[in-house]
Image 1 (cartoon, rainbow, N blue to C red):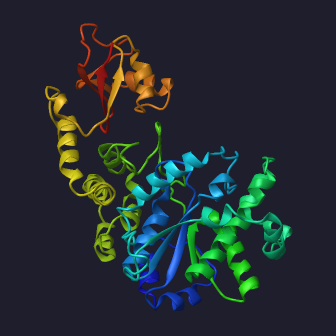
Image 2: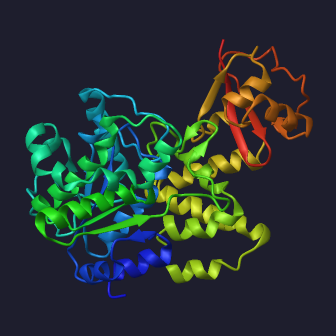
Image 3: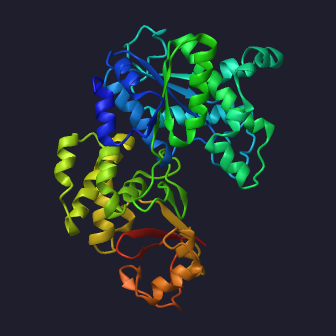
Length: 419
């Protein structure tokens, strides 16, 4: 392939589908091309599930192209039906604005953005953020139907997997949601006309929406544009990554501490380590290939490298010293200096709380049954001592006292007594 971006993207596992890979390769063989990826702003933080498209755009910029980050201030008000069983809740303009600030903050460690005062005169490949509310909020409905709607076939739209799957499961698909793929196609059209953008990137679940945009521009503008999708982030057994017992693995430290973020990657399954190395580190492809032969307990050292690499990108290299110190204190030292461990979130609990409930609340166990099984198997420790099923927290504890609660060898939290 001619394109240095595509060569590395394929080698690292970022490419799943494309509308015309040969033409995309030719197009991207010249630096300074513009491509975009979109994010609906339904929360104040992005999460691990967003990392593949984010790292793809990071690679896009690394190879001299200009990333356009489209935030869905308009489409967030509608909701993407792609492979969802429920309709997204409606958000107010104020909530969307707050979420927008959080998402920009999450993206800044990955991409170099244009200076807000540069008026577009900055680097040719500096990233830019665009909000589709700027054109969607003021659409004239009749004009939109006449000028854009006429290019869409209902038969074609129903055939896309995202819609077909929902309808086959007898889930409700509102007219509001059905319009989403038209609006996303219109986004691509506007970015093509306004910004000269000719390639849209996104997860494989966005394929139908991306194709709609490609076809709209072909029909309306008689121009060829392109679509490129990423595989979804899954484990080796096909399950979605990025979820824990406590919910999503957020990128913002306001929702998940840097230590817990690091710990998530430190504890990934052995079978997933090399794949994640390719996707989420800056290590050269050739160096990662040499790691593929590592087996057995030596994989643990690779997990630390993986956790260090991705955490330093998301939270900065300066976060690692404190994280390593906390890990050392938690897993290898006594419990006498728990007050010095400040990288680990503390879980506040009453001294009368049930240890079973605490294990579930902290996410150390997935259910009460799981907690009981772990205790019976001598897999739960308080201050490094195994406990029995009838264990109760010491009643002589004072407000603010700390305890170390561990489940197995890898999961640990600090309990802080309150009340």
